[in-house]
Image 1 (spheres, protein in one colour):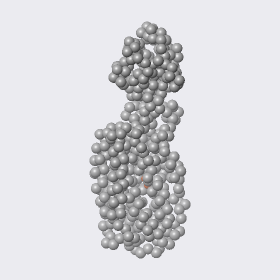
Image 2 (cartoon, helix red, strand yellow):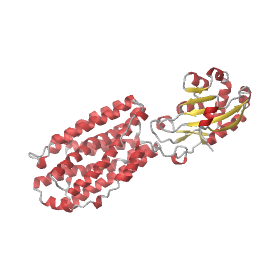
Image 3 (cartoon, rainbow, N blue to C red):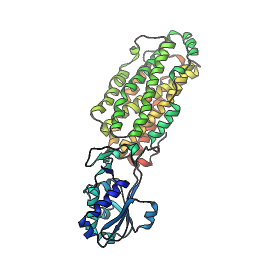
Image 4 (cartoon, protein in one colour):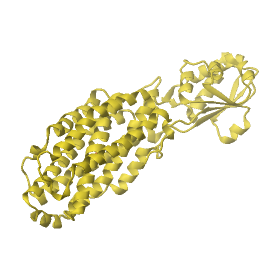
Amino acid sequence: MPHEVFSPEWAKAWGEELNNNDVYRQAARNWKWPLVLVMAEEATEPTRQVYLDLWQGTCREARLATNDDIDKVPYVIEGERTNWLAILKGELDPIMALMRSKLKLSKGNLFALARYGSAAKELVKSAANVDALLPGSAPVAENGAAVVATPVNGKEKVFATTSLQGLRHDLLPMKLYQKAKRLGIWNPSDISFEKDISDWQGLNDLEKEVLLHLTSLFQAGEESVTLDLLPLMMAVAKEGRIEEEMYLSTFLWEEAKHTEFFRRFLDEVAEDCSDLSRFHSSAYRRIFYEELPTAMNALLADASPAAQIRASATYNMVVEGTLAETGYHAYYEMLQRNNLLPGLREGIGLLKRDESRHIAYGIYLLSRLIAQDTSLWRVLEKRMADLLELALETINQIFEPYEVLPFGLKPEDFIGYAMDQFDKRMKRIEQAVSKPFDEIEFEA
Ligand SMILES: [Fe+2]
Ligand SMILES: [Fe+2]
């Protein structure tokens, strides 16, 4: 049965392989020192360390190392996961790795160690003979990925929650997941529309028309983000990012509730069951009928980092971060100023809180993808440039049919807020171009 590298079982099997390796016994006959090998902590997983008690060509003990071992042994060799994996796969010579700083001798004398080059090679050969699973393949496992063990010489998979990895509670998606369980459990059916019904009856035709117009945009917008999220969930699930998928399960549920909430308002307060797509302008249709579903569904055929960036830029940055957030902000302020429709306001207040978590996840996702390959920043910039004009056109077209706007509504309130938010977020994501991913601070 295969074992994860740097696990206790793997270390033990390595020791047994060494004791069956005659070439090693000969090459290491003068070696008399225990050593610790450290696979350094990365964004994806904690440090793992193995203790080998090597004595004159035999292995007397092989197990996970304690910090006490590190203090006592004369040799400690540290390396990043990718370098250890390259060594174990025979792609990187262990002594060469030490010379070129791909492995670091954090304790001991390199010159003395270098004399045992052939013993080191045999040591590694024995390790490679162990039926092993590598935790994560390189592109998937970097930058906060959940680690899925990929088979080296078997077809078994490893589940994060039953392996050494466990759940990464330090990752932003897990923090958002915890927050969603506390703040995202509001029930649209519990909101009282009693006062809203009497407020609605007191409105004139223009006021009703404008409110119906805006509600129709939110309504279809919420339905479209509910319908279009699944391909992204599938993409992160395929990459074994359990923490992200767990968070996205709350995300999808919240979008479904937003859809329910607006429909409830239309049914019970506006009592309107007409075809509201008459309010959907050409720019709105381009975004919600074409660009969003196309970018999201593209992930079903191509879930590459560039495709994920195009999808998230469209969904999280433009639809949620520019249009929805701005729309809700201006709509909420307007209702508040006029002391109107308290049930609608209450729902929008709760929904805004959900949306801020969705956008936070989008910033995290885009930053993770860009930190992994900084050339993708250009893909994000291009996608944003392509869509931003369309988003601003969508906002402008809301006001076109009206000569006079009720409730003191002003187009500038929508556009100004949208631009501010957009700029703030792009600056945050841009940090991923110059900073290591694990040094970026995310707001949960
Ligand atoms: Fe939503
Ligand atoms: Fe959302």
